[in-house]
Image: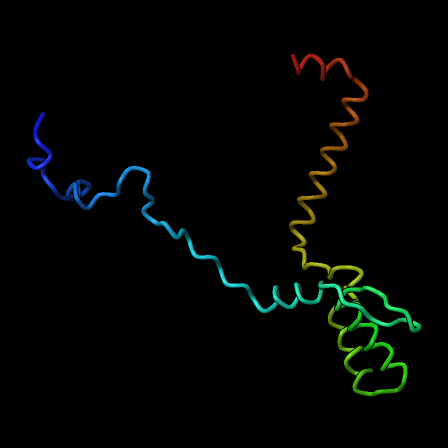
Length: 139
């Protein structure tokens, strides 16, 4: 066999001294972790537990629930800024549309669907009248 120094160097054949050693990674630190978004940070912070006083007694709850409770209490005391903030939160988070808006459907598509449904109903009616026909087709 030829000596390693006589092997050609080039594409796919780097010099022996510059190759990775066996068991050594080419990327020892690995892929860098992605950055955490503001939304993810906010959600994590709001889910942390905190202690609040309820009727003079300590109570553990999430920061999100404590925030909502304080905002609601202030709104009930006629704090207009709290009322506006609470209504904005309700509009943005609490209510989702009960029924999604109807999509615009092309009349030709409706005709195609109706024809398909009619054919399927006829096929099912035939298979109920002659069940042995379907058995013959399946074998």
